[in-house]
Image 1 (tube, one colour):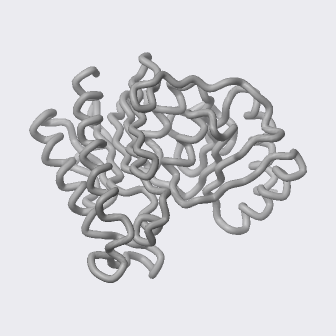
Image 2: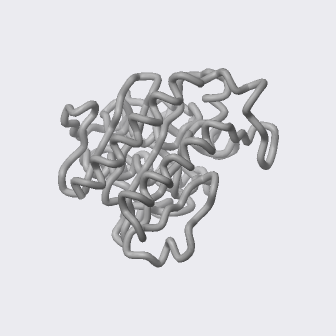
Length: 257
């Protein structure tokens, strides 16, 4: 685990340097669309994922990788361990030069994330966690404080219809909503204590695995859309500090009515 954390941290530092040097510069050069004009992929996405895969293959031979740009290695989800990487989470922000994107890397086993590292280049921060070892922000230990959601912020990465309903219910509970386009950083804000909760849908494993490790190790609670505890749920996810979950989950359920 120590070696995995060290290598992941080194890769996050590499990614932070590249993202910092290139953010906002690919709009007219190295950026292209995938499914639609807002679904960006850049040379930086591809370069960082290739670099990550090369380093992991050399350091941890036989451990498969799942990545946003180059997919899953054979039998990745049946292997005892797998690396999960999103080279630039929040690519549209990165292309625009909006300072809200991240590099995410996690080591995952059958019980969920074992190691998680997030590079937050705009704030010059590396967040790192390992199962049973807590979470650190640039080496400083971080732990969430229980609180009710009233007066706090909730990071919501939802579709437009759900966002409207969720925001209305949260406002009635005196909580504010922020939707900034990075699932990894949304969850990370809960781990850091900046937000009382994050609510997400429509994400992929690579978007959330690293940050989910941070949130768990910081003392936050993670459940699926039905409220069942799950370290890495699919479909929908609610991440909350203790004391906020019940209210936030109720607001999420209101979007399904």
